[in-house]
Length: 263
Image (cartoon, rainbow, N blue to C red; front, side, top):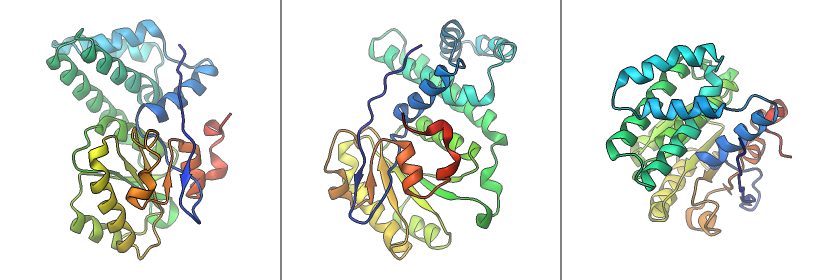
């Protein structure tokens, strides 16, 4: 199965290095493509049944598929990094083409999120002592809806040993207190809608002020690759769609990411 990914180059503020990922399909598709090249990609027949099962209005259909996934040796990591993102993409396409109803797509996404929470319960980098692990803040601004993509990315980072705090639609005063009380190594903001740019600018300003200017803020998402003015309009340090540049630029485990190295 072939995945095509179009990644934009990083936009860096003066004095900044590195970048941030395009948080949903771009990040995952790139990982999937590399693992597929190693012979560990998704099986089309099983993936199709997985999509049909999660979108079925009968919950027993999905329950009956679980033993088959285990027999096929589909690991938790493969589910999180390959099957779930691709299933979400296909659910979206099915909605656009009216081949699935709103109820089916809603049910499918809810089940994907439930599966991701279940299989991610053992990815416990967040429970490590702050001094012993890299800590990142992942923010979805108010109005953004792509929570599944953020959960996929958070799970991937946690399995790499990075502690990730996901904040969805945080209020600025609470976010300022949260950042001031902790020592994050970087902040990632995902943005897909142009009308969220002003919200994003306020988030960046809050993060900078709360950390006394010490926190590097990177922006990714669908809009990052489409609008070259995102960095200027938001005040972020980095705008890019490349997860490799993101982690390396923030000094996060740069020597421990052989599977993410760019071609």
